Amino acid sequence: MNGGHFRSHVWDPKLLCLQIVAMQCQFYFMFGMWTYLMDIIGRFDASMDQLFTQTDLDLLEDSGRVQVIAFLLNSLTSAVAIWYIVQRAKLCLDFAVTTHFLHFLGCWIFNRHIPQTLPWWILNVIGCAIMTVCGEFLCMRTEMKAIPLSMVGAKVDL
Image (tube, rainbow, N blue to C red; front, side):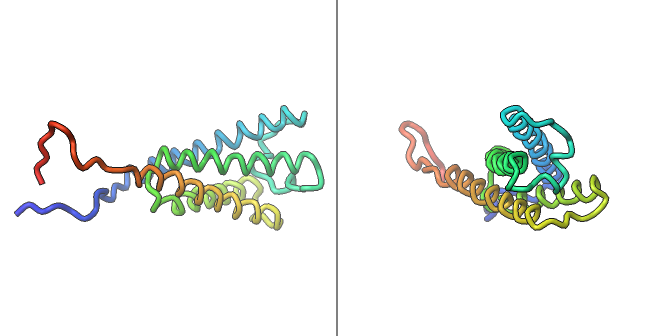
């Protein structure tokens, strides 16, 4: 007897690694694009430091507000990327946390110390939450689409 499986997806480590790499690439690409766009709008000097340092997150200065806006916009575009790349609501939290953890490691390596400012930590937690909730919303909408049960003229073997 050839029975079906409960799971429709099998664990594929190669696919998982490629999805993590794709998410991290889009995270930094879009973060760079949003930061560059915000720098053009605010007429600030663009720098690679803006992606990895924690010193430019002062909400009392225009450059800090622009950097926070770029990070939050990046969380929204990363949610769309999760929807497109991962396509499963159940995995959104995993991929959002992995992306932000790898960003944390990148900041640690770039700065040669663990980020120590409270605004950096708050911004990353909020960004991870936005990425998770919006990604789950988009994935659930796709997963909950109606499955056609009757197809006119088609024979379905149950």
